[in-house]
Length: 249
Ligand code: 13P
Image (tube, rainbow, N blue to C red; front, side, top):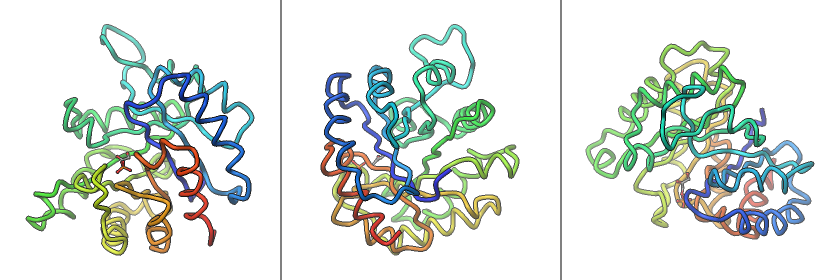
């Protein structure tokens, strides 16, 4: 797994046709980006087949934004790991704050999803982060440590070494109010330090990351890349962000 990783979380954006147009514009702009940097796009489920086909033979890996932990069954509206694998998915975002806030995602279900993904050989991108209220109450570290411990509960060290963590302060998501890079790096160091097996795991920052601020994040010791929302929707902006984030790599 690459140590430096940039993943675009498209959320509920882009049809299959728009995904194809993005990939056509995006791939030629990746020339010059160091080969060691991992690049992932996570489109909506309905665009995965098109993305898989369009990305064939490229360096860009495919991600999904959610998954169910069971292999099959009476779970209306859900998608299994096997269904994702059929479309070449290698990464799955788990525990995004929007899933937690709007769709009832719990630490317990995050844990079930992480376990199932690791069992199947996929890479979970485990997202954690505090609300503004928690930050103002001085409970940031406590919150993210609790989320990461619950998410990885019962998972052995070797498996933990196969996942990716994303720190996304909720108040910084989609607001243009990005977290101060040094503070993000500090929290990410706290996350890394709370479980020894996380020592070499990539930890991504997420929350209003842009081509203009990515270098300041990447200069932080504990920041290994980005989980990018808005700035990943435009091919030129996402390519510029990755370029600016890997300039010193
Ligand atoms: P923005 O980059 O739009 O703030 O979103 C971050 C995010 O939630 C990525 O998962």
